[in-house]
Amino acid sequence: MTTESELASAFRADEARLYAEYGFAPTERFVHVAGTDVRIVSIPGSARRAPVLLLHGIASVTAAAIPLIPAFDGAPVIAVDWPGHGLSGPYRFGPRSDLRGFATEVISAATEGIESFDVVAHSLGGQFALYFAAEHPGRIRRLVLPGVPGAAFENLSAPLGMRLAAIPGLGQALIRPVSLEQYRANSAMTLGAGAVDPWPPELVSVGWYASRRAAFAETLPGLFRSIASVLGVRRSAALSPAELARVETPTLLLLGSDDVFGAPERSRASWSRMPAAELVEVAGGHAPWLNSPHECAAAVREFLGRR
Image 1 (tube, rainbow, N blue to C red):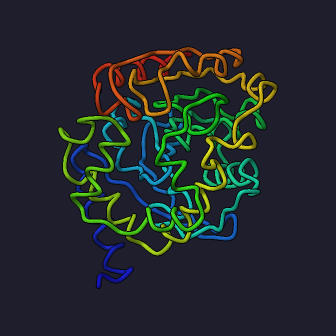
Image 2 (cartoon, rainbow, N blue to C red):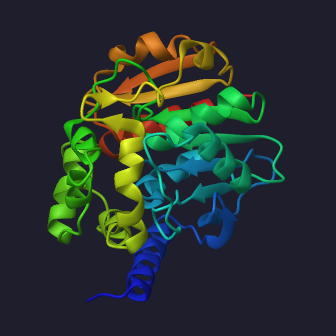
């Protein structure tokens, strides 16, 4: 049986190879926040550019977004492993967890001492970034949401897998370790057909190693229950119209036409309440930068480059 230490070593080795593929040599540190140890990876960059906070989605890892980092045009990068994910420690979520307080606490710790920063946040990361933006106007300079931001918007079609994973007992069974081949198939099903095929194998294997850690199994069932039920997204997880109206941060929604949460137009009723939001639709699924890398990179580079 593979030990926790061996999983962490394999995770770091494959992650390092993937970063090296794009010319990056990051460092890591751990901060104790929300009662657990959270891993933060930093990539140095130009002091003339606003740092980019990179936030991954549920049951995912930063590795999946590494191919998008060159579009940040040399900006420093701060990437967070959410508790229970990557190499961070576990966290006990429940249906009544204070998701907004949790997200604010982790993001504040990751950006301590930084007055203003950009955010690129996928899925659950986008949901948490919107919580933070609503409560801390002015901290985020620009916000990019590639893929529907998790359960942030009302009236979304919660994927069947999310609803099943929210069922006590069944969620634990669904999150059991699987083979690398099955993990790759599951990733393709969630992120979009063909999404992971053209990329280095480490894009998948890093997440696979993370999914086999004890912290993942301890955290994920409760996290799913905190944002969804068998009926769909919990009302408490979605941002209210009043909260969305407080998000004055310039925001780019970069959505795939076949996102598992629904077609981009389905979420317009929510994001249109944000005063400075705009939509770019591309071919692809829930991780559109993997399906349409050139179009997504161009959109992100142009948006973050605006004054």
